[in-house]
Amino acid sequence: MNWIPLTSISQIDEIIQRSKEVPCAIFKHSTRCSISSMAKYRLEDDWNFPTTQVEPYFLDLIAHRDISAAIADKFSVWHESPQLLLIREGECTYDASHLDITVDELSEEFVVSNG
Image 1 (cartoon, rainbow, N blue to C red):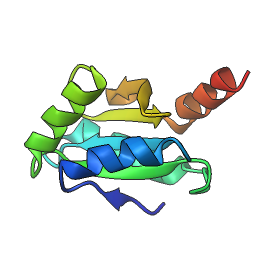
Image 2: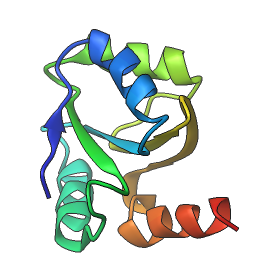
Image 3: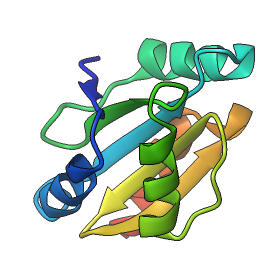
């Protein structure tokens, strides 16, 4: 799995634009939380999406709390950690947190969205 580091607020607008071509997943990770580490490990271990289907972005929210707050504001989601958001066509169409973060759940979102 090749994470794209999310390190500046300006990348949020880039993700919005990019999501009009390919869905973008944002994983908000707390480096101080064992549940977040477990969710990250499970994502990385089970990830089976080619980058042409989903582009994965990684946010270290301890280092970039400002970006995390901007994401919550921009996509009208409650801030949680860990958290996985799926951005499609510029909108957050899916979010999960804590142990609800799984590749199976994200895959199901594609089945539901694509009919």
